[in-house]
Image 1 (cartoon, rainbow, N blue to C red):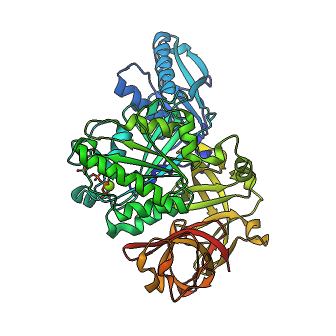
Image 2: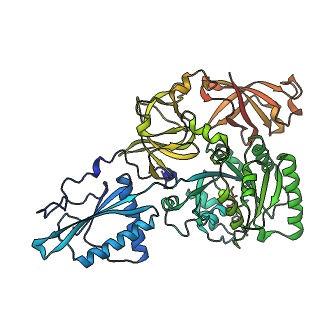
Image 3: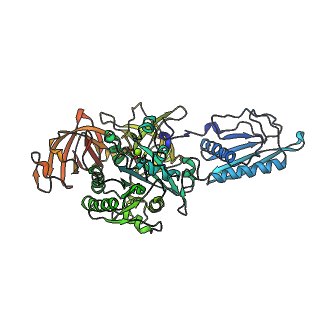
Length: 583
Ligand SMILES: Nc1nc2c(ncn2[C@@H]2O[C@H](COP(=O)(O)OP(=O)(O)OP(=O)(O)O)[C@@H](O)[C@H]2O)c(=O)[nH]1
Ligand SMILES: [Mg+2]
């Protein structure tokens, strides 16, 4: 597991049982404490702190963050004590300096503060002082999260642009900036992205960008941010279409960003497909024309002409807006999220231009369900809990951890105790009872996991279960209430065809959430022409096709109307749409 894989899962604690201090340095007569526990617990011994260099303070702040996570938001610094537990004491002046540095460390985390200072004077040691300094971390900031899937041809500059935005540093035109995103050695060597990588920028309350340029870690960005944008970098190379398709249905994106290199001759068929998928799935769309430093005047003019025509054809009913100023009103972001406008940005990673315009719009973009004026907000929060599993991990200290997206409702270890949750389905379609034991949202320990955010859940299934990507954790009542949600091997989807050779297909690979399965096309009905159309499907192009699909090998999945799906055949996307009925 790489660090980035563990993005939402590091630093888990199942309980704070190892955070108890058996002997306190404040107890009269205590001259020796047990040695400091390095690998766990929320208690840190410091003889004294006096080095205030920037790198030292930020190292200390990271250490503090770790102790806070161990203590579920509370850490204790025992001052005047060596790591081996010897109580030595320090002078009043030294204590003041130590407290100042601790205050500095806490303020670096953005939302931590010194909550208590308790001292004891060592009368037998020339009135030297020992102290316990309590530090508490508030989790008061309500963060919104926006996931943006970045799609485009191989070499369009997706990883480079994301590398530039997340690190605020230019590219050299030869692949430097993408190194910030690529995860595997073979990706670095070939320059091709072959796995999904996540990049993050945050925005503070004044809309300022929080990136790796002004923060040491993702944690620091998350803690300071009020709004977080998570970019999902995909693979342009057709061999990795499976991975790209997963980023469309599986990582709960709320915006698609299609990238086109300004030195391309025309808009490729794949790019048109991505636009069509955004239209069919009802997904907000932004377009980035990258590599502006390589564009020629005539070439760019003809490309823009092509681009506007492609948008008109594939994303009808949305206007287009070329964004040239950072001073964009909130209305542009709202119009993009409300499917009224497709903003077009022009960027150069080498000259570092155009990114501020893009981030200015993303800073103001909120998923529809989070907007105060949207009735769905209340609905999604009032609905039973539904969590989509994207990754799973096993930690010695915590057990099983699943990361993913809270699709609906809310869960909390305290609330859910006694309430039935279930994880599944397994290949036979069965669910297993499960308890959530702790929650992290954007790597921060939280009490609840709420709709519209990513989360990492430490879970305890009631019996052994093989957890896979694409599973869900749902309110068990959901499965029993006779609603349209069910586990089945057959469904009908309303789709738009992407591949002109569609008629020849008998089987496709269907992506639902993070999972993909082979499915047989049982029947195709052209709603528009009102006919059973298995024999003449070439005329289909619009979103009027009903496709009845049956999973191979009797596999059963959890589905309900409205779930997005994408189907592919080898290296081509075949169709995309939504589930209409579960048979
Ligand atoms: N001159 C110039 N080169 C750029 C710019 N953006 C990206 N590049 C270069 O274009 C090449 C391809 O960029 P990538 O970011 O790897 O493209 P990609 O879309 O991620 O490609 P895949 O991962 O294969 O889908 C790299 O060598 C970059 O340095 C730019 O704005 N100007
Ligand atoms: Mg790439």
